[in-house]
Structures are given as C-alpha cells and as structure tokens.
Image 1 (cartoon, helix red, strand yellow):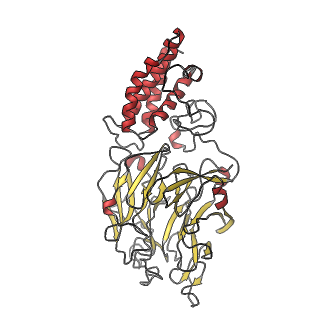
Image 2 (cartoon, rainbow, N blue to C red; image 1 turned 120 degrees about the vertical axis):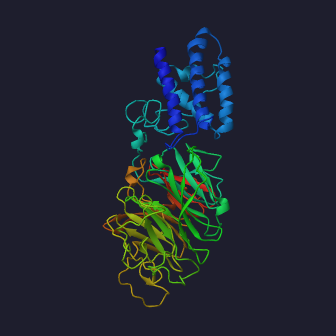
Image 3 (cartoon, rainbow, N blue to C red; image 1 turned 90 degrees about the vertical axis):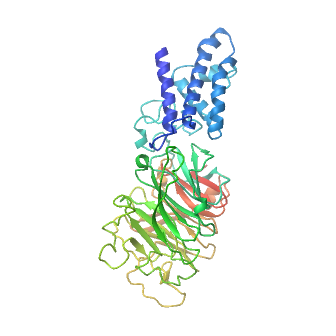
Length: 527
C-alpha cells in the first residue's frame, strides 16, 4: 500500500465522520463541536494505529507510546460527545485501516495500542458500532463501502447497506429507555442517523447512531401544559428539512389551548433554534381530546389532527360542525404564505361554506394518523367513546371532505348514544373497528415500508393503549385483509411493552412502538 493511498483513505475516514454527524445540511457549528473533535480523534487513531503496525511492531516494539495523542483527543471527545462515541470511532478507524490493506485484526490486539475496536465486524450484514450500513460484504461501489460507510449518492437510497430478510415474523427490540412519557418517534426525511423522541413534558431527545444525546434537540417545557392528554403532542419535519431546517410542533400551551408552531434547527444540527412562529391557536374547552398529531402528505401539505374539544360525547357538537376546527383533520400549506396558506383544493376553501382549513370531519380524537409512504393513502386511528375504537381509511386520490361520523355514530355505524336512531347518509365508515371487551383506546400506527423486511411491506400496524396489544392488517380493494394479532410475536424477543402511546417510523421506513412508561422498541425480524 503506497503512503499516498493510505493518507487518502485516512482523509476519507475523517470526511465520513464529518458527513455522518452533520445532517441536516444547515450550517454546522464552527468551533470544537462534538463533530470536529470526533474528526480529529479519528485522524489521530488512524495515524497512531498505522505507526504501530508499520514502524513499531516490525521492530519488535510495543505500541504504548502511540496512545498519547489519541488519549488526549479522546478525553475531549468524551467530554463533549455522547457516551460511546470513542468506541464507535475506534470501529470506524478499523474499517478504514482494513480497507487500506493493513492487518488490523491480527496485529493490533496485544500490541499495547489501546484504541482498538472489538465490537464491530464490517461485512457481517448487521449494523454495529461505527457502521452507517452493512450489506454483508466489503466491496465498494454498491452503496455501502468496504468500510461500511454510505457511499456518495447513497443518501438518496435509504435502503443502501441494509440486508433484507425473508418472511414476516417479527419481534420487539428495546432501543431506548429512561425517557419521560415518550409520545412519538420520528425522523427527518433521508436522515438514517437519527431518531427524534418526543416527550410529553416538552422535550425532544435525539437517538443518534443508537446513542442518546445528552442535550435535548428542543425543550419547550416552560410553554407546555402537561400531562393527562395535554403536552407536547406532535412533531413533523418539513419534506425539505435537509435544506431548510424547518419543523413543526403541536402542543397545549399553559392555558391548555392548542398551538401549532414552526421552528427551525440552529447552527448545531442536533439542537433547535429558540425562535418560534405560531401558525395556529385553537381554544380547547376541556383538557382532553386534543388530538395533536402532525404529518406531511405526499402533496407537500401539513395535516393537523384535532379532537372534538373534550369532555364526553362531544357536548358542543364540534365533530359535525364544519364551521369549527375541533373534531377535524386540517390541511394547510406552509410554503405559499405566512404563516400559512390554504390549499385551493381543500373541500371547504374559498366561498364554499365551512372553515377553509378543514380536510375531513366527524372525528372524536384522532390519536395518530399516517400516510403510506409508497402510495399516499391515509390511515387514522380515532379513539372511541364507550364501545368502539376505529381505523379510518382514505385513498390518496381522495378530494377530502369525508365525514367520519362522530358524534352521530361510533365505530362502524353504531348510533350514538347507544340505542338511538341516526341518519348516516353521506358518512364514511371505518375499515376496522374493535369493541371495549378487552381494550379501551386505539393508538394509530403506520404502514410498514421499511428496508429490512420486504415481505412485510404494505402491512398497517396499530395498537391499544390500555391492553397493549399490537395488531396488523393490509388493505385490498379498500377493505381490510389478513388481520393478525402481533402481540405475542413482539414479546418473543423478551420485550415487555406496557402502555402504547404511539408508533414511530424512521427515515428507512422501519417501525417502532413507543411505551409511555419510558421505552421505545423497534420492530425487527423475529427469531
């Protein structure tokens, strides 16, 4: 291996660290950030390891002296970065050194050099410390490099480096614990390095390459009323977040009213800016049924879920009142005007009677809705009153204006109150309901479109907060097919999921189950 070639590999490894820690591409911090310290540490480890193998070991010398600079820089990384960062970088250095042709695994252990990776094995098909991808080989040019780093252009293919498995058997794997009332797990588009975890009290934490960052991405605790059904309830990243750094939150303020606001990332990609622009204020007459979920559709518009205002039975009749925002799914355009515009194709836009922002109505408390990232179809988990929970479904071709029935009906056409008669004309009934015999509150989920389990694609997952079951189905011809209870499967990995507050979806389309008790579980291939 020529000296120039090795130095080129070293520079590449340093660039990989900078790339991996700088998403999204909004101005990075300039001085001694975790990112810059990591790059300097990685460079020191690679050069020191090379000196050990090329100069010291061939002369029969131990490499203890080569630890000096990596030790110094490692101490700085440990002080500024999440726990485990140096371990991950040691493994990144290993991959770069192996790719250069030096005998890392046979030479360094026992040499006296202490910055040795012993946890990762690039090319075994499993993502491990220091790896951005692992496609089961050590070949360049296939989207995942010989050092298990994403190659140029692979950012546009979120499945690069993921080895798919056959079958639909699943289990749950705990990836985070110790959180305070977590309510959501999500990620910006194409950001495979991070998972953002929303806590009800007002903080958003980041799980980055599997490690929890100590500093919250956002802390609006002083602005939020909590808890019960109030708090920081929703988070959605702009489809072009990687370039504009814009994201949106939904919370109940200290008066208990709903606020939908725009925020931006700061110069540090792992910390939000302190400025906030309020888009929408909605007065909440009661403390419950706030909805709170946010999501961008394939049309680029922001959808907002609002409950019926609370109490019980919708005493104010908000669900069926198209002149009120409560009990609705709203759709706004956050790009065409300030603070927002009305999409001209909204069903009640302009001179048409009804509030312009409304996309659909007749909802009681939509607790998590989502769009199928492949075809744009919409799934809504709407929490029932006394007897039934439901999943509402809308194809991507819909022109909006659906009436999902509340508070005239509950579930699949059951008149409310029970025993009364009701006019159901013009209503869109749910594709699925279940009763309260062993459950009480639906938590809507996502359609699986991930990389790891292609046979599972097209399967919608949902759960119940009270009974903690997880179930799934697929849609064919607008009807539910292949309904399954997945609870036992998920528990087969030893996971004890308690109160299901939400599901989550990362940039690769892999799914998560969020437990209000403080844990987040990833749905992974079963045994």
